[in-house]
Length: 314
Length: 314
Image: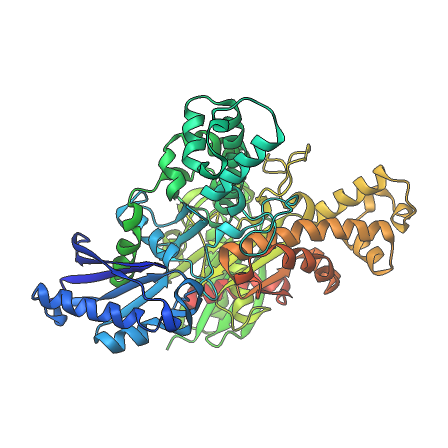
């Protein structure tokens, strides 16, 4: 009997792992340090060793395990081949072949944002949906898209990279990806802070944000000020909402999702985000796609291990 | 032995049909008038009757036919349920259930643009690819997206409706869909003519386009003038290329296709289109998705029957 699945979420500093039963209950969660030195050569062996130890400790026979699902921050195609993962030091190789060789268990792998989207569909904010867009507003803007129940990986696993869609022609500062005017420059936590700094600099308007040392300005501080009714912060939220709302309208027009779930640090501001996003979304989205619901992600940092487990169960 | 497949492409005035062998060769093509009166109630019975006649005429037994694939201009979901098709008079019902009931053969159905994209992947400009975007620049802008070999239908079959993604904030004239600033308003044949009329009206610049009666101005005339070096026509082509190139960059960033094939009336201008589209595409597309090739569609009006046959073979 296959009663267990392991979900693995590889991050730049930590590997998160979860042991799941076949209904999708987490029986145990644990973490490893991600050893990125020497081209990340230790990462998969460390994971294999840790899984073997965990199974031994729980007295679970390998025969009882369906396999291991894994998400990692890189371009990973539909066969689980990674085409470069800068933060891990990885080049191009097959994750399933390598990890399966070490473990003697079936392995499936995908891009971490796509895998997290699968997790939100399975056990998070998008339960019951088969067509979903997951947006993570963190340091950057990440995205994962689920189409008819499966991850949209694309040619090399760069599907759903919505942080780098072009949304502004009049940008002079380069994005991390070197382009100008990417969504990430306005809708990530860093982007919200950039917008706030610009607003503070280009006007003399009174604002509680002026009481915060500029290097301590955060997206949280901006949305706290929005909630307190600070007019300058509200302007910043309007800009954020216009960029993100229009971009989500475009994405919805292309993908026709049932739901768009928003997670990541910025989403901790809560439902108030939608007050700024929704008007621009509704104004610009194609009528045939306007029924897409906007909702908060609910799994937080666990979306990755849930999605990885689900990927392996497919 | 299943040696045959029928592909059906339902249009607002004509139903195109093709009899295919299992290698995808068209053995015969024929057409019917689309009878849209009375909520389009005759369309599927007419198709069923015509297929039965054709099989009888060719002495093909039903046992030898895999089934019938069908594309139609409406929101058609992954199960072949149409959620409204205005041009045909159709409301909501299952095309496979209805047509299969009439014919006694398996039936699959999809949105015509998505089905045409499948055709271009199978036997047209995108052969060998599994991730493809097909753009049709006709009276409107149609789109179909193939993800890992399958059509991106979305929640209700509105996936790939790229003609109505928002690309311009400063538009005052409404699109057919009632929104303002849709891609279709600038990149369709009608859109190119609009741009040309605006350019002619807002400047006094000499142009061979001024020799054409305004009601006869066409996208073809504009691109003919571009080829002859007409400066005002070149400006129009630049605008067209900027809107379409940036939109394709966004789409590529979301879908990560191997190829984007462009068809429809405007594409008859040929490779010169890419001189105007490509610079804006390359400037704005996410680096991970920049390898998407831009190419002309090759199946013309037959993309629909090819794609429909392929859909049934899946």
